[in-house]
Structures are given as C-alpha cells and as structure tokens.
Image 1: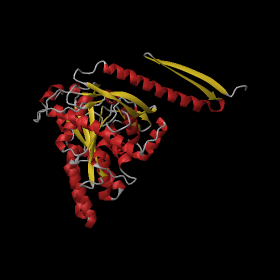
Image 2 (image 1 turned 45 degrees about the vertical axis):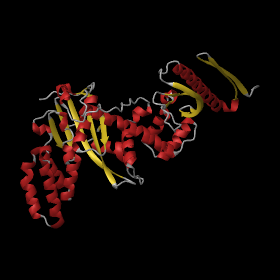
Image 3 (image 1 turned 180 degrees about the vertical axis):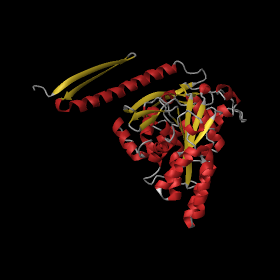
Image 4 (image 1 turned 30 degrees about the vertical axis):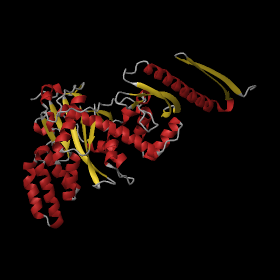
Length: 440
C-alpha cells in the first residue's frame, strides 16, 4: 500500500448553519477512527440543532416571559457529553424557565437527559447499579457512576409510579372515564401472588410485593413448553385489598376489550387477598387453587409422594367432600407432629374447597391456562430484588417495580408517561365502568 491513511470529508447543513468535518483515517485503525469521528460529528449536529430550536423558541415564548440572558450547560446524551448555550427566561411568577432543558428532560441540577436516564434505568432493571453504570459508560463513551444510575432509577421509576397512581385517582376518585383496551378477551385468565423483599433504613425490615398477571390463554412454543398470550403484568407495594383490586381493574380495562369477556379464570395459593384480587372486575369467575401449592401442601403433610399424589388426584377429580372422611381418618391415626401437619393440610383444603376441582369436573369447557404466576414472580421481582444481599428503601422498591414492568418499552424509548394531575374530588365512584363490562 502506498498510503497509510484515508481522507474523509463530511458536510452537514442544519438550517442555515453548515458544518464540515475532515479527518484522515489511519489504515491500521479504520473502524475505531470512523466510530470516533461519527460520534464527534453527532455531538456537533446535536449542538447545532439545539441552537436552532432555541432560536425558534425565542420567537414563540409567552408574552409574559422575559429573556434574562443565556447560560452554558453540559448535557450527557446518548451521543456523549455535549456543551451548549441556551436562553433563560423569567415567567409571570418570577420563576426561571429553561425550555431547552425541559425539551430534553434535564433535571434542575442533573446532567443526564431523558433518553440517557431511560437507558440507565432499563439496564438497572436487570443488573446491579454498578454493572449497569459500567455498561452505560461503555455505550455512551462517558463515565457514569453507580450512584448516578441509582438516581436515574429513582427518578424514572417513581415518575412512572406517580403517573399510574394519579391515573387511579382520576378514575376512582374523580370519576373520569377510562378508554377501553383493544385486545379481544373472550376468556381472561388471572393469577396473583406475593413475595417479601428486605428493607433498609425503614421502620419495617421487609415489605410484601403484590404481583398479578392477566392473559387471554397460552400457545405452544415447544415440547411441553407454553407461553402466555397477550400477557399483562402488575406489581404494587403498600396497597390494601381494595386499592389492589382497583389497580388491577384499571390495568385490565386499559389493556383488554372486556365488553365480550364471558368468564374470568383466576388462580392463586389460597391467601384471602389473592382469592379476591379480581373481584372488582365484575366478571363471572371460576377460582382454581394453584396446583403447585396444593401438591406441596400434600407432600408436607404425608411425606410420601405416592400417597400425596393419590390424595391430590382425588381432590382434583372428586372434590373435598368425597375425600374429607379419608383425611379425617388419617388425622386420627397419626401422632405428634405428623398429626399437626395433616390437620394443617385438612384446614388448607377445607378453606379452598371451591377451587379444588379441575374445570372439566365443574361442567366448564374452558381450559385452565394457569400455573405461570411463580415464574413471573421470579422474573418481575425475585431475580432483581432478592438474593445477593439486596435490601431496599421503600422509594427504591416502588421505582424498581415500575421499571421491571416496563423495561422493554423503556429500552426502546417507547413508554408513554401518564400525566400527574389528580382530581380535586375525593369521593369514590366506579359506576362509569359498568356499561363497558358484560355481566352474565
């Protein structure tokens, strides 16, 4: 080769501003040099676009605003760190307004714009803060600390949670209508469960996270492997049973077309708040006791897999009344701790006897596409928020749960933030939803 470099010239025009970059790319580092050049060019273009937008805003500011000068500002974008100059205004209330900062989602004393905050938050929803900081630093070629990632998580996650909470207040306290979902759901499947996470620097040492999933069925993706169709996940902390039911009702109504829903098949471990999670939806409901918990309770009571399997089979095919005499006989014949375990199992199936029979033995032709809640609890909560010595502040739990639910949308920058406005009225009303739900 006669030359050891390649000359590259790029000209870009932003409105009336012309930017030109010329660079010699060494042959032995072509890819690295081009990547660095393109990144630098992107930062120049972003700076030029900011100046154009600032000029446009200056021509359309409200009449009561007064220009008080310009200020320099650093912004960490997905293209790297950019320094730009923008106008500062004073509004009618003498508050300082910076439209360019608001446009890019820059906090008052922060440097990360909204896009970078979403990137860091989505990474932190599956990895520790330190690992997420390392990955984000590599992606945008700018040093990011783990504490900065934590602030991103708290900011973005709690903003999502605040919007959802305000939406519930607008609906159930303000009486505003909620636009129905578009997903057809002739049959709806719902499951719920709870998991405890450790807290730090809080009055309590742990808190329960409530998890629920809704779907319209399942499809086969391999041998003995299925995937839920049109799955929608919900998580919450600090809600009583009524507020939890309202949260599920809002999410279900926003996601699915409930006008044609004939029946809701619900499942769970038999806990009272789990059994009543879907009550406010106003749909005909069939409850099925989670088979994993039923089989586990039987194995603990009998400590013999074959006997436990026989009892569970009879409970699922014949019901509690047919098996109750046999259970009582086992209790009378046992002694000590074995008798206590059998008595606990008897009380467990007695309290959940309406959910023991399989659906085909209830004259119901709808298949029971249930049993996925444990895996979804692991994906949504356990994998990120338990183990490895994890402990959380309550605000951190609230933020991380919101991020784990919406990680895919945040990763593609497609999440639509809900407004934070709440209604002035405080009375509760749900009558406006009744005409959208077909009752049988």
